[in-house]
Amino acid sequence: MIRVDHRSLRFPLFALLALAACASAPPRVRTGDGPFASGASGEFSASLFLVADAAGFAAAVRAPGDPVELQVAHSAARGEQISAFVAVKGCGAAATGLCDVRVDFEVRDPAGTVIARESDVALWRDPPEPSPGDVLFGEAAATLALAPDARTGTWQISAVVRDVALGESVALRTVLDVR
Image (cartoon, rainbow, N blue to C red; front, side, top):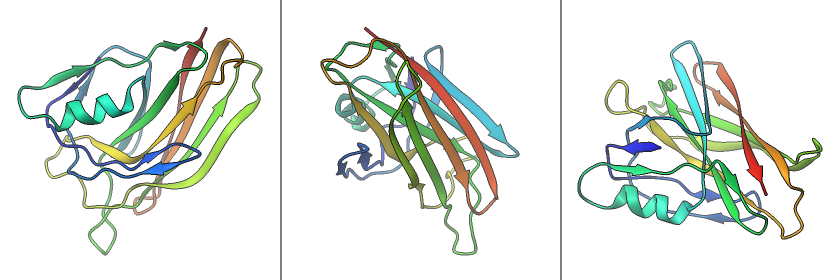
């Protein structure tokens, strides 16, 4: 589960094949159990997690009211779509006052074959989080549309997240059970 404390989100949905944009401010989250990976390098940290309904995710965090809990994806069936989101904390501002966080996404099927790869995607190019401890959802998410004949088994979704201003990077990997 991902508990969202702030109801705004900013992310163009990067679909490894298509690009769409939505705009608002970053949410703060607390993460609980689920198929997500977290890592840190110095003050900079990042988390990678999977969501089955990207549009529902965006709508839920923009809706007014109490914090919501969002279900992260553990598995998917052939023909379904899964989005991998990256959240960051502690990005460093360059001389411009803005962070420059970038990500490389990679998806491997159960045989280890690279199915999709996208490098140097802009993840966060705005000011650092407004309050210490806030988590910023990146401006990009890798969306995997599983073909009806996709291989079943454990897929790997990886992200190398780099803070250009700080010179720090975090390598993350999570898995998805495709049935």
